[in-house]
Image 1: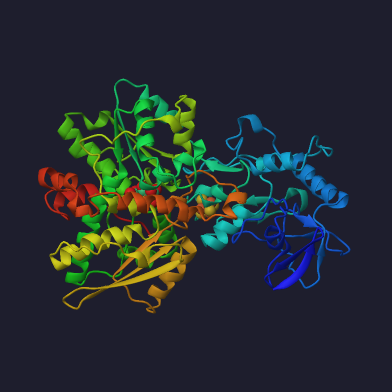
Image 2: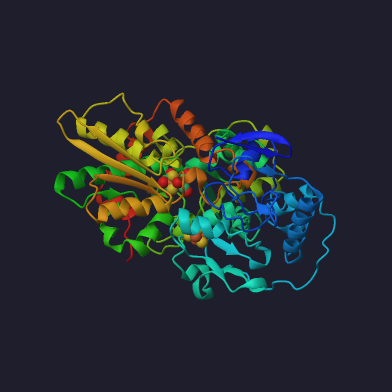
Length: 573
Ligand code: HC1
Ligand code: SF4
């Protein structure tokens, strides 16, 4: 520990910590803009400057503490320096705050307020560059960019994709793709992590709200909606509820009030995925198929694999994602059961994910002759629709998903957290391989935020299933390099593109840095999913009576010809 003084207060801070961290220990809040703990600690914006008695003011987020250091965080000189910096940023910021998607949740707006900026003294030249809205998932507006570089850090260092970086210098500095290509023409995987860390409205999802309103207003269409596991534990944040609050019943009630003909649960699709994927794994193990088998439900991960590990495409499970399995079933089994022409069924998915917008456009994901899913919106877009419709979300009663597709197991629920697909699969695979209804169903080794997690399950016949889980594409890269080099041998690997899994997907409510720097939002939301699973009586996919019925009435067996036609897919190098 070292002892220093901040604003006259003696503070003990761990050696190696920064002035920003030490100030926090002393209860002193230093304003920041570019700083994002663990992701972007580069001292770029200089909003956090403090006086350490040196010739110039120093950025607190990167300045190390030292024994006897004297820091002043609040003096006329410091306040003026911060204000000038902020006014210079604002002078080149497109100030369309009233209509900006981040209005009310903009860190720049909040900072202007906190630093008491009443006027902008330096009006001058403005950046005027085209908006890139060609990607199916992400819209980039350089005119709102504050050059904090959080998006670059998350894309390069966390996701290891490097689709964006800085170009030009001085006033012309811009965040851009290589050769200024449209994002859609780069290796961008549409994960949307850059959106979640953007402090302003320079990055946002490509909105599909109007398409949903149009479908809902079309009397010729039967409009059904499916909601992903992770949406229920995050949507409440958009209405002021604590992070991780379970809002399943309120979410269903809101969707019914928006006018959807049926409200279904993607978790049922997740149960179906486990049936197919579990069967595929058992077949591969028994018949000497390609191992390790790798999960295929995260579309950002699939695109990453296609770009970076084409040699591992045969390792991917051929299973479609739960979203698409469920969509295909709605336009076949459900259409038949309800006597509705599949051309009249319009499937909307609500996902915590921006890459799902890309996934639904993949031409091979249309096994009924119609796209499995017609429109995919994010958790944020659903919240906007609920607000636009004037629905009082917080005071809604809890309502149930609709029959005949609404039932799901706890295994389907936990899909939304990293390790959840693996745990759900093990619950079924171990039962199938042992021929027993095993009670031990919680695989805690694969839960939590460790970047790469490993589990070994030894069966009574002596066979050991070796499993690994990676979340965030940087971790996936590390794990896959081990697999590629023969350094690690597994039967089954789960990969989710987003750090923390879908609970932290690129379409989830955006929590500002002041929250993300203090709370692990991934853990809080995951807790909500695990508690929902715990409260359920059916916690294994193969025990879900709805799933059993679908196989009995329609699909036959997992891996059947019909199941293959509707529920499986292929990939492109
Ligand atoms: Fe996911 Fe999945 S868990 S990919 O994260 O396999 O988006 O929540 O819907 O499809 O079920 C997302 C979440 C989601 C699929 C499922
Ligand atoms: Fe990078 Fe993901 Fe953003 Fe694409 S969507 S630029 S891959 S962070």
